[in-house]
Length: 139
Image 1 (cartoon, rainbow, N blue to C red):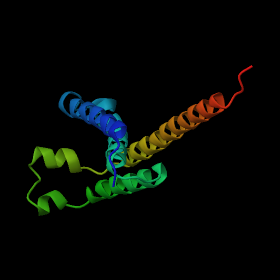
Image 2 (image 1 turned 180 degrees about the vertical axis):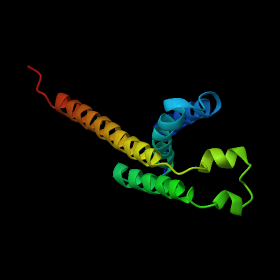
Image 3 (image 1 turned 90 degrees about the vertical axis):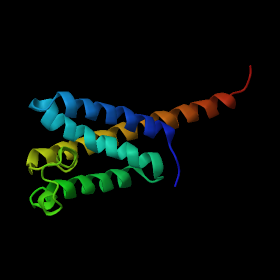
């Protein structure tokens, strides 16, 4: 286990955006779709803050988790625990299943994998440039 400050800062920023969406944008595209898109990205960076693993492995674990939560909405899980009137439980677990949510989760994971690949590529290229600059002969 390790701590990645960069990922944790990204998680905090996304968490604050999610809170704003939940408080102020309760309907429309941003409230219904964009929030689901962002939540998997937020969970990815939360996991990446503490787990050292390949981005693809973290992304797949987050996507499976999101799908499980979404499919649990087909059951009366909140009622079973007496949480059907709890606003926080309804916000976190939701109360209606939606295929559009599954699509938003999938697109969010694809997006975060693209971001991770591009940021890692830039990091690798910058490190390579530093190493090659260091070894260039002085004329």
